[in-house]
Image (cartoon, rainbow, N blue to C red; front, side, top):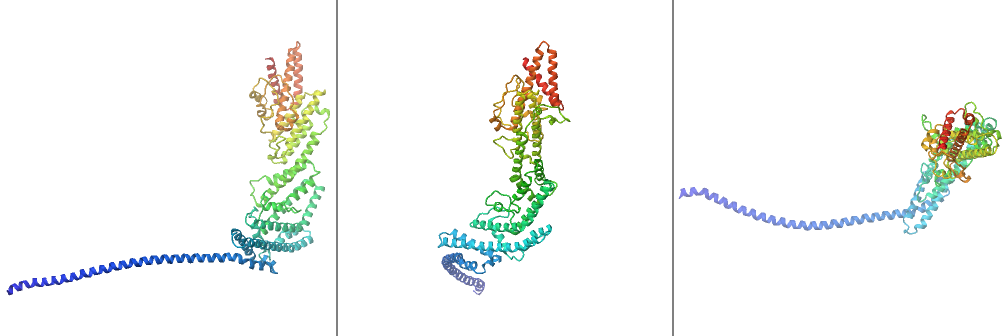
Length: 639
């Protein structure tokens, strides 16, 4: 038993240990279950807390949102109240005894800005209490503030102007006067002025941009009116200051024009005036921080300044230059007028690509363009029209002038009809004095663009030639009227082409009244015959030529007045060529048909040769082509 007990003792011990372990594990399981139950209970509790926290958070966020809304509302109310409350403060400042000193203070700019902001606020919120009344009161205060600025600047201008004018009157030195009028004036306007000029610039910039273009805004009209008043006061002051200098320059110009050369005097006067205008423009830009560019907008600074015309030349006022020049040139020769206009055009309007463009050159270019386009071109056109009437339309021509004399010194126009010679001179003068755009196209009497001068020269010359042709037909001058027309019309046509003013866009209308001249020859062939000696033959021959008998009548006077003058010239030239070649073809044909045809033919051919050599001795190609055209007529008549 002892051995058995000893053998089982170890197993008994293990059994007891296992029992203890089992009890311990049961305890652990029980504790774990209790813990799980506790955790489940805690989880439920946490879920309840979370729900309460979420609800609380939402309530807090709602409270914060409400707080922000109330804060914003309070701020808005405070801001809105500021727009209402500001009126008392600004009223006291602008109506105080020393309010005029505000315009030279930095705070004046803030006052203007705040007044404008208040006006804008009232107009944006018309439903607010008394907004209309407050808007009107603020506008009145803005007007008062701007008036104070006008008065402040006027006071400054009067002070500076009085000092500068006194010093200018006390000296005779031109350099000293220039220094006083510009350097000293600028210095006195800007020094010790504190914020007066900057405040003026702020007001100007409420009306115009730096280029002088009108700006739009709530109070743009009142700012524009103020700017207009400021400009007017400034120009009046400058006009007073510069009047002695301007009068001296004008006296010198008149003296030089009378005693020396009006052309030289005019050039010097234009240069001097352009320089003074540039100096005025630079001074204006420094004071007002605006450089008005050319504009046709009635609200622009340019037009505003232009409306204040004085004797002073500036960037917007070229009338004094024009008046002085026109007065001096009223009795001058037409050639002198053309020389001056040509010089202005070449000196200022035609760019030299080798020279760098400067602000001065741009300024002079604009002045020259306006001086010519607005004044001198019209003046010159009038002078040309008077000369056309005197030397072409109404000129008295002796009977001997209707004869075609020999060519002198190889110059084709030397034996032209005297009014035609004068017409050539006028065309050359006009071309040399004007930009090509004013004379490149001869337009109809109803549609004159640019200058009507070239049109009138050609039209009046044609009418004079037609009257001369009629006289030749009714008198015994021994002159072939068709050859007379060919000679003179060809000279006129050549001159138009050489001056590059004969290449016109001919209209299809205008040929309906004209009979065909040469029958049975295609236009292409005819172009080949005469294009070598008749300029622009391709343009006026291609509209239809035929060879054969013709009965040509001049177009009615009403058509002549409205017809393209260059087209009319072409028509008459075709008519004369057709009449001349057709008639001489008939004479030669009749001579050959007679029994004594040989001697008659020689006589007729000799007579033809003589008149052609007299008219075109220096143009053998013209003679050859006319003879060839006569032969073509003869062949057509035989058929």
